[in-house]
Amino acid sequence: MTPPSLQHELKKQQPFDCPAEEAYLNLARTAGALCGEFNQLFKANCLSESTYNVLRILRGAQKVEGLPGLPSLEVAERLVTRVPDITRLVDRLIQAGLARRTRDDADRRVVIVSITSEGLALLRKLDKPIRQLHEKQLGHLSCKELTELNRLLEKARQPMADADDC
Image 1 (spheres, one colour):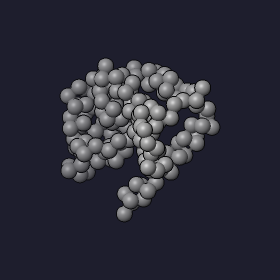
Image 2 (cartoon, rainbow, N blue to C red):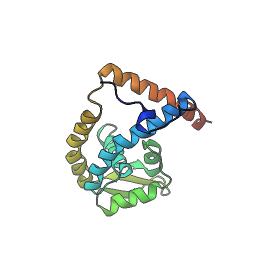
Image 3 (cartoon, rainbow, N blue to C red):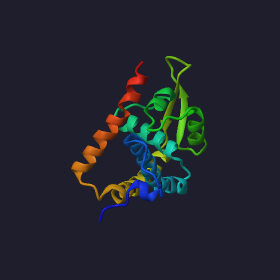
Image 4 (cartoon, one colour):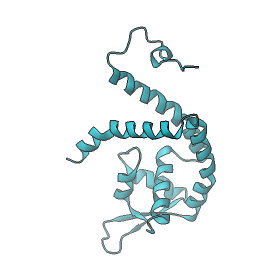
């Protein structure tokens, strides 16, 4: 069965002005649908998408890179969705006992953020439900389709990445 077109879903009487408009609205509609279930899971665990992302970044820095923590500006640069105030995000995680903040010994101006054992435990608890949600939401796509989707999304972001390099 062919899924309904976006024009049909939105009950739009006229065709889209251009394919780029339709693609953008398709991305927004799809992102909203996919994020909704994740946000429910995060909310049930007193997290937001951004605080979860910070914890994942800190775990990765510790586990994969062998670092005890990361400067807060480095954490901000690695976020999937950029936020204007990394300090407030980190404050929330510290208040919840999921992260800690220290000063760099070499440069006291640099704030180092690291994940606590409680933060690691929460991520371990969420790992399986997150994988299950990924499978539920995108498991109907073949590996080849997912690879192509990723390639196209990266290509769509390229002009913004090039602009950031200036």
